View 1: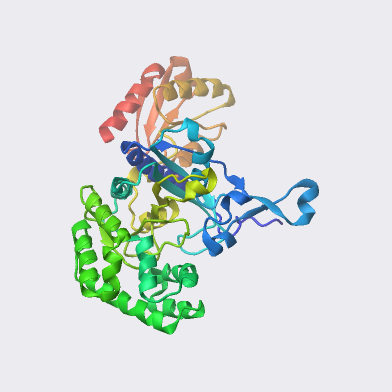
View 2 (view 1 turned 90 degrees about the horizontal axis):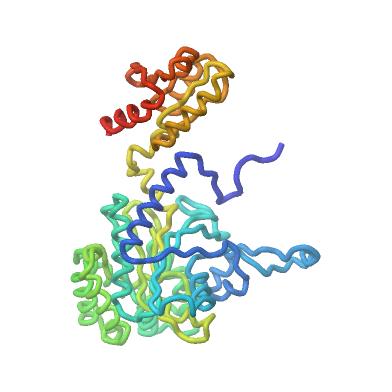
Length: 458
């Protein structure tokens, strides 16, 4: 027999799963639209050359490639790929449709992406990203708005213990320079540093050594990391505290003084000042070793964490050069991506979903006593649906006890009994299963009576 489980790292979504996903997507969409972001969708499949070279060497290895088809299949070569994220396709869209889009373009996009990654808790090979991006401006207002939008979205979902860690990619480069890491080792060092919050300093030091970073540079990085950690533990989170920490590190540690006072440090200061005027002001914290693994970031970078999840709920940053790879001219851009799957995992473990999501597939089930009554059942169902009720018609003329048991198993609260007597009289008997009561209504008035009962309950 053929295997029935989905491919590793992929999942089936049963009705309750879909309702939860739709709830989260609906909440996030509503928040993004309050900030004036517009919807965008792109194809699941991109040209392979569109994706290659945008994510770094490790990212390139995780792209799901699609073999050439037909007579070219035997070559083993690939020309297409499943999209790896939503940001690179956005950059392609901007380059391709530039004349049809406004100079300042704000978009949100909620679609699946695919990565040939090792599956783990909250990590899958097919997963949804909930992206929000603004293009066309270098102003720190963009970073502030993006952080505020994702912060409001998580708060609307019921999260209250998350932090938005913020750093600057150029500042991190300056830190590596100050630590004596040679430029040819920067990219590989960033890959290792990106794992700090997942595996800890000891493992990262070992990986840095394996990647050819000198022992002296590793000691410098370790010392700064420990100092920054102590500094951060003594300061509360928030935009103002982050500014204090930024200034304090520059004044206290020689290796950070030139970093903090440089152009990147000044830009990060302006970003924190802008965030301080938004709803995300109390959520941000400066993390001088936040790296973000993707290679296309050029400025401020952000990541959202909750206490009981290894890894993040999402991340983003400024990527002013990415669109230029397609367009031939720079287009400033900044965005943030929330990971739907990880949000769902944490919300399920914390029982954060509203109670109605655990409800039934329908408000009413119309019973069929005998085959001749089916047309009448369908007509009644139409009347109830026209009034806005969710209705299931039981298709077979089974015993009424079996039909009621089926409705009860699905959590359907009411059964409309339509026997020969009711059909002759133009009435319907509505049984409320939980209360074990029933009422007789004219068929034309049944919907209003059921809606009133639902209103009183709610």
